[in-house]
Length: 87
Image (cartoon, rainbow, N blue to C red; front, side):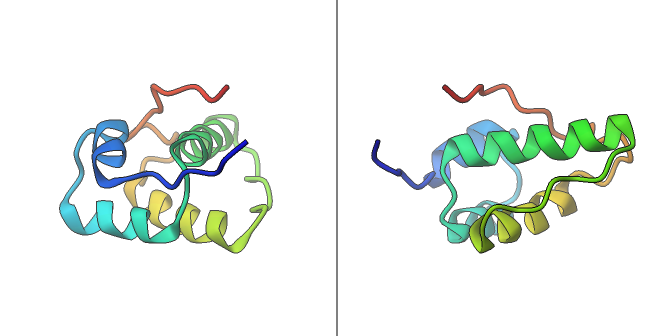
């Protein structure tokens, strides 16, 4: 399986077109679309259930999570919900 970094258009579509700087920060993490979707879902689920979020599997995922957490200020993680499912 080949790893493919998410591009600007994919990030904008996934997140509902946040500002360009945010898109660039997410692209700069090097995460794939599946990783972005998975982290959005994980953050939202942990907040809804009042659980601790899982430990990031890599520095790339930790960097991605830091950006996404800024976009999801709601205690229940409701600002952005993923509409993409990973295979």
